[in-house]
Length: 113
Image: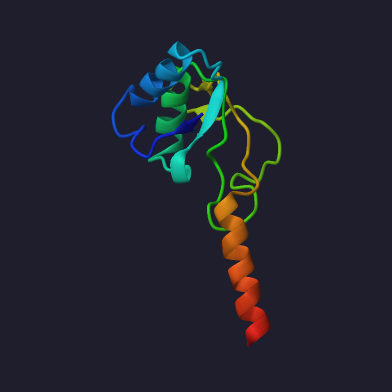
């Protein structure tokens, strides 16, 4: 699921969005936040887990390709509050569509100089 721009602005709003889709018959098991937007990794993962998601794909770069956490494999983010891993996995995002446009623009500028 692609969480809305405001889905993390209030506790439980992301869970509401998951619930609404499930009530419409969609088997929502994970997602990614709009514009990769979140305040802290812990806040994001707490909301993802509260929504009943099994995975998230938000940890990435919006403007360039690459793995934000240096990991190219699924991993359970660590919850420092409980001193254990979150139950949902993070599936690292390698590239976002905006990255392709930004990369093309940089190459175009480099070739023209």
